[in-house]
Image (cartoon, rainbow, N blue to C red):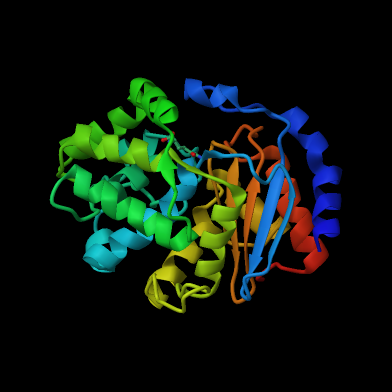
Length: 305
Ligand code: DON
């Protein structure tokens, strides 16, 4: 298996050249554009890795399906989906456009930034510190990694430059959709995006979604079955933003990307997949990472369709 993975990495490394690392969060510029790594964890906890699989990077938008699961379990799906829609937006992840033109002016879905900010605002807790602790503890349980922590440099870098996200949050507050303190919500959102992970952490979170929310190591339920279904459906319809349709055809694995270069894939009843390649295409998805996912899907016949 690791031979196959190594071959897929070798075959697709060249695609990194055609993309670029994210620069709008200045700290992300430091990534090495040519890094490419993969980890697969199957339902029996067999772990297969190849390429730059020990590199740490920030989770960024791959955090969105995970906080969505926590928020739905906190407040129930009726409350959550009265504030965030269920439809693909067809727009880039940081687009603000439809917030102004759609009525009611709620974000299209929880995977774009506006929707994810709303979701973070609905995480329960006594105060921001308590909310952050709950988020961190959920990510730690799902990844089976007690040592997850926040990359302070990336967090500060995004906090200093995140004005577009700030604009969306204030617009949502002005419309009465977001009801919490904007600075506090964004602080939490920037921290959530700055959690530092490896492809193994991603694969582990992916396999726990593949098992419908039951931790494959402990047998404990971490996510309600219905919630895990909702999360995976959003990964299919919106996980790769305005490239989700093409990705569903070419790869067919519920996945979520992040501008740190990560992709988390989940193949129901089979495995979780983590990929890292920080060179991004114009839609903010890992350039070589998508090719690697395509290679694995084809070679192992993993499309869910
Ligand atoms: O809010 C942002 O812009 C980043 N923290 C996350 C965006 C992201 O990862 C989009 N993914 N491809």
